[in-house]
Image (cartoon, rainbow, N blue to C red; front, top):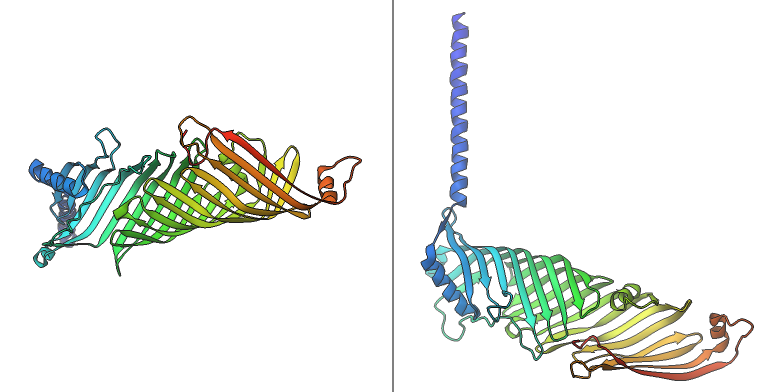
Length: 410
């Protein structure tokens, strides 16, 4: 073998060896960095117990931490299997989180500031409950504002992913569940945030549940959460909502609601066993107020034309307008007007709770019509061999006992 070729072979072998050794070093370094970055040291039962006791004082509920640790590389605290109990030990927990990561800027401590760079919570569930009389499960957080604070706490960024929030009003009853909930809050010109969920449900008494999804932007000022825009999609309705939640006085919250409603789907949800059919689209503009011991939904609605198909006849109600109010003890539809076959009609509907469990509610349906064109109406009725003429005015009042109403528990 020529000498030049032997030298080339030795050079190639030496190069391959150096390159391979360099690759091994790089891989080993990356592996070491990965291990150190993800390595979490358990802080032990002593510090975990201290954190549980101090946290319990802040939320006024027993708090539990399955594991408390710190990452070596970045100094992040890791809380696993985090739980805040409900009102009673037998109740569902107020909050459960599989994991919470908290980053702390240590040098800020010298400025008497607790600077939390970020808080990341994943796989969590929150349950909010309310009972008749205003009793609820939302904790009264002790922020320690009663005296002079030695440290100021600042939070830069919060991300709560893959969450679920359940609200249940046992007094009505009605409930909502926001599934696949993601919340992001960032300190920028105050605290601002975004929230989204999909796959949620809303259920009122024994009526069929409604699907729900939402996208919202909000800002936080003290104990107030201001929703600047909320797009809520529920089964049969699209709503644009603004409003605010007073966390310091839970469940106090008020929203301004603008909705477009599908009458056909609403009938299917709330009167599933009935044989008649509704058609048309309605618009609602009103206020929803949730407060201690109850709630109020009130506003005005209108529709260019609503339809009622019953007994083979398709009644039409053009230019339908009215008001509604849903209170803890009654549901009222008032000031309702509509065109009706050349004339006009006024409608009133109410259902009032008896206030006594097991006793039926009182329902009324009051209709009044004026100057109905009998020729048009008899043509609609398809009265063979008969065609009426003239104008017709009248009134009909129905009263009956109802098993329940939308504001009464069965």
